[in-house]
Image 1 (tube, rainbow, N blue to C red):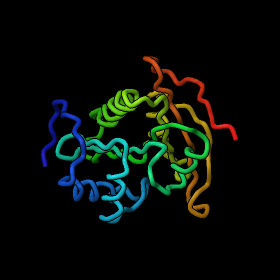
Image 2 (cartoon, rainbow, N blue to C red; image 1 turned 90 degrees about the vertical axis):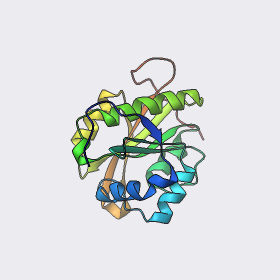
Image 3 (cartoon, helix red, strand yellow; image 1 turned 90 degrees about the horizontal axis):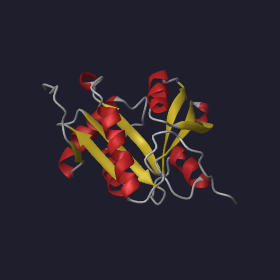
Image 4 (cartoon, helix red, strand yellow; image 1 turned 30 degrees about the vertical axis):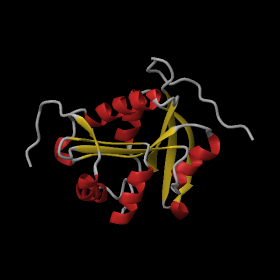
Amino acid sequence: MTMSKDPLPIERIAAADEAAILALNNEHAAELSWLEPEQLSFLLKEAFYTRRIGALEAFIMCFDQDALYDSPNFLWFRERYPRFVYVDRVVVAAEARGRGHARCLYVDLFEQARRAGHTMVTCEVNADPPNPVSDAFHAALGFAEVGDAVIHGGEKSVRYYARSIAGRSSAAAPLAMKTS
């Protein structure tokens, strides 16, 4: 597969993309999580936002607070915030890295989420095993750390991040948590 150096369009993920999405996802199962075909189909139907770049140089899958999703990371945000968009996974193929695809997907997500009335985008980044590239990437996009957790029986620890998308500011703004 040859990769274009020209900007490629961001397109919705279609049913015909599922096999390629599954393969790319499972190549990165250590950072994400392994998915079976039926799991992926279910998640794509539940997702608030799914997009790909090119034939499949990159993809992103996100959920809003109303999704039927049992990820401990998603549930952490749902317990604390009344309304949000959660970035569950964003993957760039190894041969397409360094072309700004992840940044383009996030910028498009921010705009789509804002249009839908959302004011916050959330995500998690592995703390152990560490992912300093992702930490730096999210900081550069204006995400701020809002919590942490140890999950999967102590096998993984994560940091939780959130970014305000209210208005036109690119800086992270204070975020309101749910009160009991």
